Length: 68
Image 1 (tube, rainbow, N blue to C red):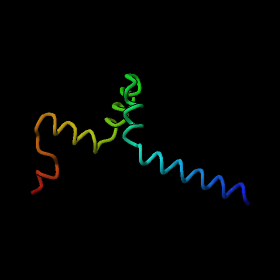
Image 2: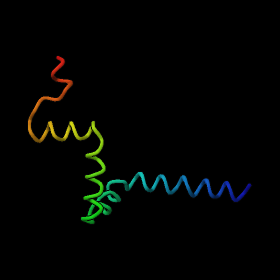
Image 3: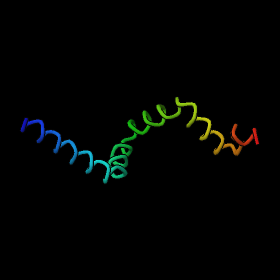
Image 4: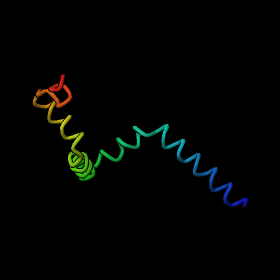
């Protein structure tokens, strides 16, 4: 019982510290070129992000704007 309480407490502290430093952690990860390439390729496989990215790059209206 005591071990699970300590484990839970340590997990909560780790989550809190990770949340407070999330941008610093992301910058450390994306500093590596090969990890940045993997991250961009992974995000571009998601239709929502890909449509938004392509729309902003080429200045085309998004699908939500066409319906209005």
